[in-house]
Image 1: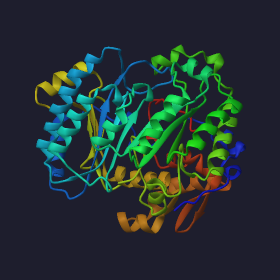
Image 2: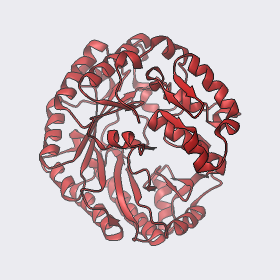
Image 3: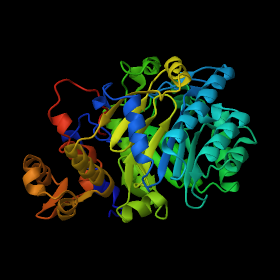
Image 4: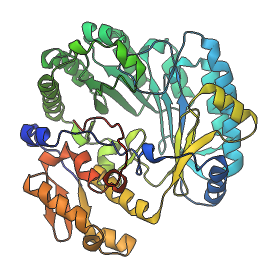
Length: 465
């Protein structure tokens, strides 16, 4: 679908400034601010029962919220504590929720994808990790190791000599690690002290133990970062050569995320320097042979993400770009979100609520969203734009039985203006996002967001760049 391109073609400063505004990341459509409490556990049970007879695989997400220390930039839902015993009741209730889920949906459907996120999943000890994985394998049927994607987010500061071996032994074959920046001054400013030595040691161990894919998260826009200092981090990462790299834009929203209030705003790079860091990073990663998948994701040419994009099978969910687009997504643990039977379902956000509800033998779902027919077709359009950088109007019409031009007449007028700016090429039977539009793919996708167009109150989103 898309091929790699030159950084200078991607990075058009005039267009970046013109389209500089906030917008959704489209890890879902409708986006999470549209979720409401009018949908809950009873609806979830009904959806799971209907889904039980389907013959499509399952993608399972488990949220482990605990962190030993707080990273000031973090906007995730987490519980910061040094009390390891706080994980004990959480694991007990995860085991109960796994049983609830398996009882409702059965075990004939294959788990093709598993992801443990957080927080810091490696906050859990060996016994807890083994207990949870044993329960999952006891209650569900997993695809063979070579066919499934079983990933976990790790923190090298939470890894001893045996951790990587244990994770591989229980079935994980993919690893994602947050690095953000190796510069000591930057790490101190965001309270994440993580040496190159301990980080690379864990990554090398993962390779030695047969992990099939390794992802590294970097972040630009952090305090005290400059293009010159970040270039040193890029040197180290490119030399290690992970399979995937996620280059996230730090969104400074201290009113929404309390830990960010500890960041000295005067230390943040200027908008111009932040763009310099981004351009440098894109140049370096493309020159190193990585393919720009979209937004903040880069992957090697032979990686599953790149292959999926090339074959038009790339997908987007709450973990970012993903494969296994045919799978229904189920969530476990606080704040986790699932997508099943045409609806989103989200679990409660606090430990106390989670424990109380699960102890009653009820799913801890507190809100969600049932997609309408209109939602489904707009979700499809936005998904294909985000993943393919292209739209085939004829394919849309075959899938939904309606004229693209008639249904999206207003949207096509807006796209025509973007075409004049060089973001995309609009044809009678489709459109292609041009290199200059790829970094601005969120802007293009926003054209099709009915809720954004008709919103009656302001919703906080991060800047698109």
